[in-house]
Length: 439
Image (tube, rainbow, N blue to C red; front, side, top):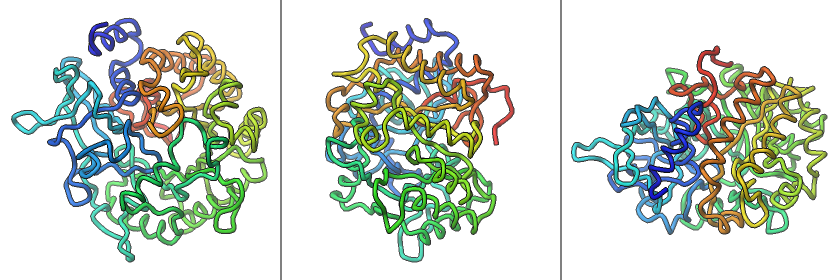
């Protein structure tokens, strides 16, 4: 193609039904973005909401490799608008890559823009520091550490267990850097609480509720690493569930409660429901059997792919199919050395998985794979999956939803280009904007 611009424009021309905003967003998510010094934040003492590293690093380098971006954090997200492509408002999660062809920098008037191949292609907006981030808990911890918000303030992300009990090469998911992210923040001397105390979580939520006067925060997600034994004397369902119970007792109906956990037996899933959780995310990660076994060895060993899928279907009997939303990591299907070697094969496999779940009324969603360099797949695939795969996935995703008469899942804010706030993939940007905003 000769330039990244030419590749992007070729894909926009070939796939005109995929919003142009989504093409840029997917490229930024899969390959990262560089930040000029003029575009970095002043951390928690500034006017810009800084990147919180809420669960994974989502960077293309370790903290020591990011230079000043490790000392002055980039913004949590950016908003793209305007430019030569007349982009509608597009929220993009920040994934730092100093070598990216995309760069955020201020012009001579101090206005931030996104540059590709040296050309300004969009205006850039950054999230203002929310008032609730300016207040600390009684023990001095920051709200950003205990209860960061993402998706332009829509979602409170409660990573209450910062490590995973699938540990080591024979158990860790091969694309996941949750354990390394924990280690690098501790090594850098940053506050990064391993197991969050429920009272600290409640205090942070009280601060958010008090100062979020516009009620921008609409949902919370409880998540963290897999639990194969116990944490603080609790199994996985009880550990994550007891936070939900405490939140719902203290703030009944204030937020949509979601939990990301393993695919658990139906009785454990019922406990989530009884604790007040409204949406369950038993992530299936990758559809292909061989790749699941290779890339998710711990999940294959402890549960197994077939049982994992059975449990997802069973959970629909507890939560209702619409409220079961398993995630997959879009792009690992093409990761060397074991992944599919053509986009056609990868899309066919992923679509098979989409059709399986959507035929049961379950609507998966996906996160665009960021090849973090401390993971086996990130080391072997620093460029990630081809942009064409991601664009064709958006097309296949929307077509499969249409085939089964499904609409955008609840708990993700409004769908449609110019409206979506979900920041770690473009699936919500690619859905119709003319439907009612989901609850």
